[in-house]
Amino acid sequence: MNLLYLHAHDLGRWIAPYGQAVETPALAAFADRPGTCLFRDAHSAAPTCSPSRAALLTGTTPHEAGMLGLMHRGFRLRHPDRQLAAFLQRQGFETALAGIQHIQPGTDLTGYDHRFNPPKSRTREGEVDWKAWDAGVAKAAAGFLESGEKGRPFFLDCGFWLPHRPFPEADDDIDPDRGLPPPGVADLPAHREDMAGFLTAVRHLDRCCETVLGALDRAGLAEETLVVFTTDHGPAFPGYKCRLTARGTGVALMIRPPAVAGRSFSRTCDALVSQLDLFPTLVDFLGLPDPDWSLRGESLRPLLEGASDRGRDAVFGEVTYHAGYEPMRSVRTKTHSLVRIFESDLRPVPTNVDDSAAKETWIEAGGLDRSRERVQLFDLRLDPGEMVNVADEPSYASVREALEQRLDSWMRETEDPLRDGPVPLPAGGYANDREHLSATIGESP
Image 1 (spheres, rainbow, N blue to C red):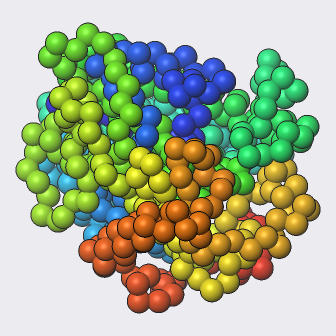
Image 2: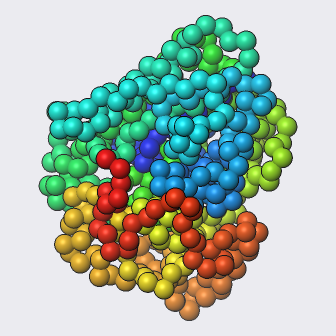
Image 3: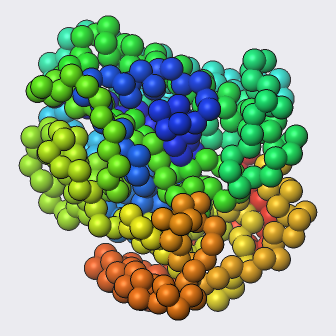
């Protein structure tokens, strides 16, 4: 059995199979394909890039993996040999990376027999043409799949940049004034124009996925390949990426095991699951021995095969560093979510909000002056958007206490360094000051 891992950057659940008004015919067709399971309540372990990817690819929490911040800002895997590609390589898989992985610098990359990294062309404005680069990634991945009969099982890790910012110019047929910004973002012309660029990026991502999935079919490999499609966290709008509500941690997750006996239909699963569950799921389906480290997830095989509808009782999330230091932890059940800030300064951290027209509006409206609550509790049955904090309401006292105890137990069990106080930067690492308005301060050009 082979493994194809398709992943997007900053997508959240913004594709048509999740009810979004965006054109993604290839991913819609994949969702409808017999054997595919679409998870509607899947969450990343962290709503920031490198930590979430490190958790998925090692089966451990970001802080256990050593990825408490971004790879390009100095954070490193504590055990590179525990990365999925390296593990599969030791099991005899032919491993290939097309595009981004964002947990190891290219000079230190381990675990891959092949790496396809197309050259980056630039637009007339001097920006990297990410649409062209993603198309090159898709073409390279398709070429690997169609390169002839393989003598051993393969793992193809195919990572696209889009829809990460900067968004491309909107396609001509996407009219900003006939759409809406995402929930929570004010309906203003500049925000609608920004959203049109995002939808264009998502549309292009879908076309790249079509290239790869089409090659898998043409090569005759679809029925012997387990396919995973997902992303790292929510999209780059204020209140989404780098937040521990579902707008930040909620991710698209579709899995299609090969040749599922008796499965002539796709299915939708409402169970609460974490991307930490992917590593044990893959070990289970691929028939591999358990790794020699503790995995924090649970195999999704019973859910995929329809033998169970029961997911996790709770999933956990974390932010420590993004562009700036913002230590937070969360616990989520099907009915409630709790977020705790581990810092005395409760002002927002603007450097952890990607630059955009919506961010400018938020700052101009006084968003930087709005202090946050140290503990935030949301009743997901009454408030699915997680907007109303009920942490101090007497009727929720027992729920708050139970979730805080659960969060503390998880932090203790996983030896979270935040329990001992502020987490320092690694040697050679850097972060923005709290007063910085933009993450671009200190970034390499």
